[in-house]
Length: 465
Image (cartoon, rainbow, N blue to C red):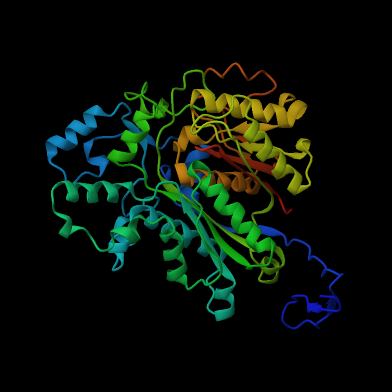
């Protein structure tokens, strides 16, 4: 191969330069990524404004469930009632439906002409993406702009209710009634697919499935695509529609859900509290528009924050339980900090993953103390878990909570931790989660997301002001 020469890749319009076999082309610097639009569908309401207002004011989206919430319309009434009676957890964080402001309009998002191929989790993603794109003022019409806009939307479980209904048809020997859209409705990447098709986006089309870390991984992966020059704009986030008989029953059998507060649903999700006994299952979607910094500046876009760090890790410990010392969480937070170039003492706020489980919340608190040390115990670091208000949105949680972190920076308000009346002994007077929303200057914020299988993801945002 002596004497062979090759041509390094250069962007269109640049003068070509030849590199010898002994000389590698220069590595371009990573591009900076900013958030220019946000959209949400949550148990607190449909839309960012409604959700944020209710969150900051300490309202709760958890309610009691009944048989009609189980998505078992094709089953005999006695089967539906028997199933409901057997569930040990009878609370959930459900998206409010309706046609008024702040409610999710099923007629608009689920009953359109394409509705046969749109499952509920896809509808939530379409709604949140629409709000985020309008917020970003990014509705490209030029072909080259569409080619430079991609989508990265994931989900944890997809449409389990469709699987349950299909199983009923098989058991009743009625398979001929199975919808030809069954497979397209349950495929998790169809959320990305539908958003891409609706707006004509031909950039990267990506979908993560990493349990409860899905939303965060989807955003982090999308940011890297922009950093490495694959695209200029990404529509990124997570979605979930998990309020159905089979999903709730499965988590009940896993003993993961709260069961002590069925008569007091608003008190059921209590992150970091001594009375916590499991998470409250929830649903919804969170979507961000991520954009290369100079691209956003050139078009005069509103910039909420910069995504400076993305850290990932694996616990390598247990299928559902975290390591008690939080070693996987420590690695993910440390890697996000390293990528950002920030010192731990420069982080002002952490939106914790804390789901209201006995083991998980304590492990995360220990991990935060390990990484942030004196900064955490001095009282200078504000920490909260917003799941007391929203429940646990599974695959959408990381995206919704990343948006909460961005909004905390943007508005200068750190949201509270609901239902924290008796903090876990892991905390002390200097290191204590917020029990009331706090107005403060927030220049940097970290959003933690951890999932079954020991998968961890942390996103670190900074103010651009």
